[in-house]
Length: 243
Image 1 (cartoon, rainbow, N blue to C red):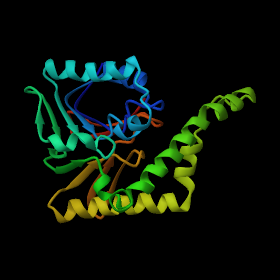
Image 2 (cartoon, one colour):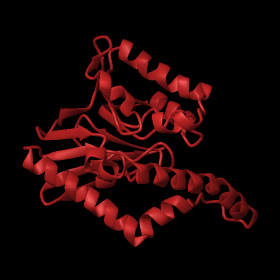
Image 3 (tube, rainbow, N blue to C red):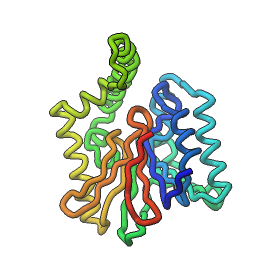
Image 4 (spheres, rainbow, N blue to C red):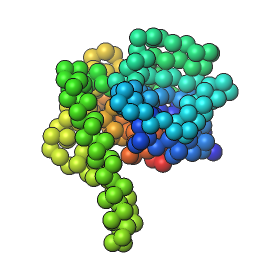
């Protein structure tokens, strides 16, 4: 059992076929923290308007987090664009240890102040052209559904390492790289101009820890492909955990 000061995860997309709920359950079993931050898009309300794919493991994730809160873990649910249906009811205080908020401040062991938000506020496409974002999600889901087929063929030819077409395109297409770079710059500039030392976010499904013009940028990744989390140790060290 690994123990941390805080664990941050985002973009689980419960209610969809792509959600890696079983892996997340195992991760939660193997990693404990005083604070657990759910940084948006935990439940995919957008996808469930079209078709609900809710497995028992999805319910198990919710139950596991509620149980952790009852046992004393501070659980903070920060809403994202896919679970924006919760934003009409904010802030929500569900017992002593469970809060649902739109964003929240976090003070690290090093004394630095971080702005914790899902990150859709930094995505100009989501704000100005929501219909295009939804269309992009459909295309992303299509690529995710191709991954098992591609890897089945790869295994037949002796390639055992998992390979993701969607991740490859995201990491190499010029337009995608420009989008990610713009997103990171907007996020860090916002943090800088509002008095924060850094920003912790999700949204773009690309886990990372970096410094941009003296501002800490940390992205939690996702639990659709990378199965990643951001953690702060009791020594004040920030790490990326991949499951």
